[in-house]
Amino acid sequence: MIMKRTQIMGYILTVLVLAGMLFVPESIGLNRAGIRTLGVLIAVIIALVTEILPIGITCILSIALSVVFGAVPDITEALSGFTNHVLFFTLVSFGISEAIAAVPLSNRILVLLIRFFGVKSKNLLFAVMLCAAVLSSIMSNVATTAVLITVILSLLKIYDDPDERKKSGKTFMIGLPIASMIGGMMTPAGSPLNLLAMGYLEDAGIYISFVQWMVIAVPITAVALVLAWLLIGRVFEPAQIKEEKVWEYIESLQIPDHFDKKERSVCVIMAGMLILWVLSSWIPALNITVVGTIGFALLFFPGIQVLTWEGYVKHVSWASYFLIGSMMTFGNALNASGVSEWLVGTLFAGQMGLPVALIVLVICLLVFVLLIPIPIGPALISILGLPFVTLAHSWGISPVMLLMPLVLCASNCYLLPLDTVPLLTYATGYYNIADMPKVSIAIQISIAVLIALWIPVSVGFLHL
Image (cartoon, rainbow, N blue to C red):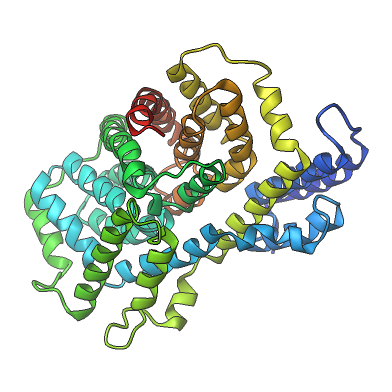
């Protein structure tokens, strides 16, 4: 197999970083363990971005490299990230996603939205984006995008003119991952990143309930989704479709008039999980991961059996599993060695004498900038999570003011199609890397402004 130029550069840079860190002298705030931890992390990120090995293999190898180069004291610490309940919820979420994909539910929701919003091309775009956002609020962003790609590819067949199909394909394929990632902000169950942030806050003695999270995130999600739709539809205006063609497409989906046993089971289990997740705001025993695990297990029960173990194992994104686990390990190591505290202290050398809204805006913009060299949400949250808690205390503000902007911005990693979610649609060939920034920069700035305006207000009346 012939290696790409980026892979060759990746190998060279990875080796140079691993070798070079051995010669970096200690400095104030950065000891030898910290230098080696940071060096291994940078090398792993380079390897991940340049894809010199499959993502899962790079993450597994990082476990050994952490021990060999002294980033962690032993193998137990190198595996510490794999003992967090967030990682278990990640496994559960893939089963929930597969169950929804196994029944006509997503197509049924999409058709319902098309009937409600109409058949004009921009309205179809909004229907697809809203469907993606709603689904990704309770299932993996990756799975949501993967499921709806097949729907969009089928929809694009409506266009007889290849140029119109290509033009509209660009619009839908850029809109889909952005909507999925925006929707993932909506509930704690929408993304493992959300649970990561909640974990840091719980360690700091602050508990955010399911309902409280939604009070903070849903208004931001709703406005951001509409703004993203308007911007994408304007910059990449899709070609118009004849109304009769749309109805023919809907007929071709052959959605049953009535729910069969499996679809009813999925709807009942999903509704039950949502109810229990909401009740978890008042009943602590109804932990999000616990409720998700019970719902996940029910999908396998005799008489329901929406899922089989063999089918589930095949559909789990093991790359995501190992990515999140290894990045959480690095987060633990960075915090233990003082690197995270040193990094935040370097970026914020003194007291930031600004109104809270401007502080939040600065944090949002900083996270989006950091997503360029580190386009991996779990890595960024693991690096900055605990130091942001400390920083918030030193500034005399609630840690929620910094942790929520961190996770919400890290969830919107689509400046370039480097994250797994936009990569899925980029692989269809309907748009180029240079196309996405034409809308993604403005969308990210809009989200930063929305977060800066709303979070201080919502955190205030929620008394967090």
